[in-house]
Length: 542
Image (cartoon, rainbow, N blue to C red; front, side):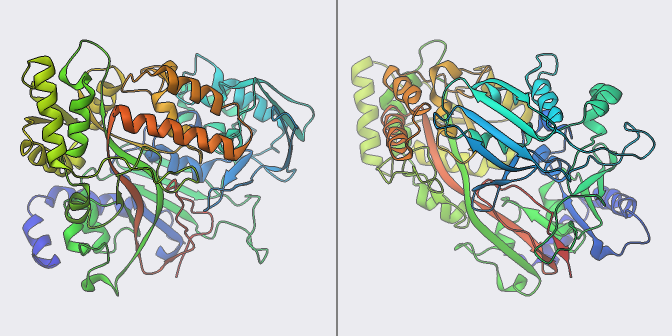
């Protein structure tokens, strides 16, 4: 294995232009000469950011900066418990349908010219009423409209009380309200900026907008009137600024991190994983004194989805889908391709970080059974298997190539189509891909979030059911579960639905992911959480 100096030397020519751009970018992102480097947190977003409007906080790339800029009624703590945010308390009616929130009186929007020259104003319940109406507005076309689909009505009773009434009980609702879609926005800013609010955000969060040069840099500055304080009564946040770069290449990002030019790096990429981690997921000795590794549970199931709509294909046969599930060694895949980060998905779609997770047996490696299932399919249909194509983006090519080689051993010919992430998203949403690489990161801490992927009324592109799976018994259980207020009964219903997904195999689960983050040694005050939300409110640099 090449040492890091040799690795950098090998890559030097390839990234010379990128290095030049980095010098320009990072010199430009020095927020002010009055602040030392220890006051600025720097990270790279390789997937780019498309909007800073919380109504469009669909992907992690958008959610992270939006989380620094905006607040909602409630938030999730590092253990995914619902905590107060702008709402200081709430009451839920006995029938589970009405939620009454009492707001804090010390929350103000960022100072902005939309309120007058560098002025602000207090957040009141009418602002949430406006924000929710905007989220539902078909002209806005927010991908987060579904969050309020179970809401019958909402209103501001006065400046301090905001009431929401549901059509029927929905126990995960508080967790839904913690999503960034439900952040409060000021009507004045929306009216002033219109569609340009995406690049001129005005929120209530610990940081406020300063500068965005799209595809180059984003700078956020400390909000001096933020309403939260630490346990000692000191005003938050501690940092003066956040500087985000947009290097699209993960190798370049890795080199910048190792050289100390960025403070933080998320995830694990095939291009550098063997240079920094051992096969058991621990840091290599070279880096023990230089960087800090942080891992934890992650509500993310990685899988291959099988499209079951359209014309009949071999993939519509349950035996073939089961054979694919049995046909590759997930444990071996995790050890050598993920360096032990995550666990093999040998159960259902619900990840182990949720209380409704069940240890019921899913699919483990059994090549003989896989061959038997393929043989039965051929005998029943008198057909040979048509070659199967797996569509993926480049980040997961190594996993798909591993599966390709493993399935060849059981008699399945697999082709791999590598396409850009945006093309992959469009293809799976519109049923254009036979098998697609996908992941589902929980939007809120309840297994309903995963099981909604298989509810027949959620067919994509109007819902998250990308496989177009439909099963009457599953639908009946799903509809019963979303009305059930008894937690134990609801979890048992979830587990029954998970067992149906295992039996019918509309997906090929790959692994249950882990949050993995790399920090420079001087970064403190940032906690992991199972939805991998970046919160820099209490972050600081020594």
